[in-house]
Image 1 (tube, one colour):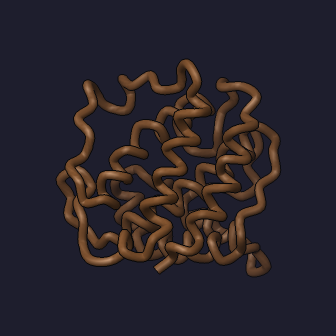
Image 2: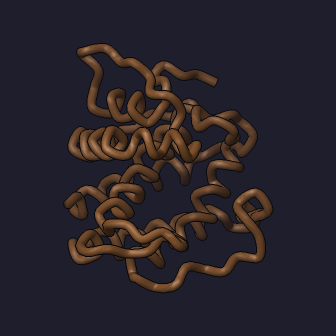
Image 3: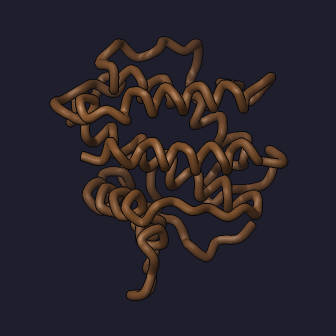
Length: 189
């Protein structure tokens, strides 16, 4: 259970996301520019919150592609959503038993790992896309790596991860997590 890793990872994620200077640069997350990646985060966050609370998922008017959530004060919306995710998944009870993510029933710990992965992987995506640094705790990166390895094939079959990227034997925990999730740690815009 990685509930204790959520708060520090979320803080680093918010530090990066709050300083995004522009919305058009491409990101290492295939198919997303910065705006698209932020829209993805704002769209799926309520689904993750609902899964953690064991509530019905939101009923959006359309899918992620139709959502236009990066408008107005999107930074405040992202900060509030992140704080809610921390409140939910920063507690061990959110990681126990089973829950639903949409129509899929799965272990609650898998959803918790998704939340941690969203902060670490997409935090890195945003940092890399905008020329920022990131400093996720090695323990958080290791947990994301272990999760990416465990669900890698399924995630790749669903288009969530790209093909695994080889990293060197001396790779950092974050670089290993990135490679397992289909990201090239050396990616540049």
